[in-house]
Length: 187
Image 1 (spheres, rainbow, N blue to C red):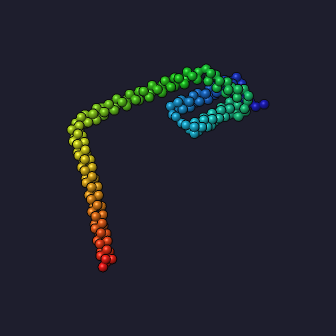
Image 2 (tube, one colour; image 1 turned 180 degrees about the horizontal axis):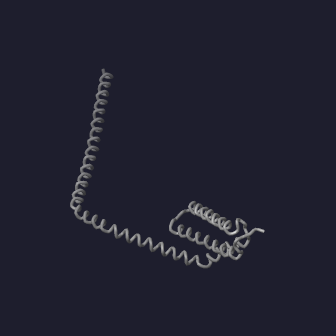
Image 3 (tube, rainbow, N blue to C red; image 1 turned 135 degrees about the vertical axis):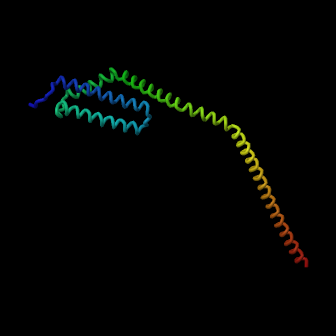
């Protein structure tokens, strides 16, 4: 018979606490999923990571308690601890975590807004000072647009006139050829 330094009651209590620890780690993962939208792939990877961590903790705890001897009451202790945690205090702990994280986020936002407020005021003052320049810039831009439209219109008109002139020249040449052809036929 192997000598174990711990009693079975002690191993059961530690296994129950181990199950509660695994439940606590699951709540931390749920908290992360609450704030970070992971999608299907991210959730699958997170679940896989949780199971790897939980298996590692369970195996280490079993090696620590019973030198690797897997006993039924240790496994039942893990299950019992997880059930006690999830049906007992999980909702309260998760709510407290969410409250603390929301409070922390709110404080960070207020600090950032407080730090940004002087910069906003400075930008507002600069906008007021630059308003006349902006009005002049808008007038210049509008004038440039009008000029562009005018020159574009003129360019189209000139292009159209050139086409007409080219067609007139072509018509004259054709008329001359027809006259010469008739003269040759009459002669």
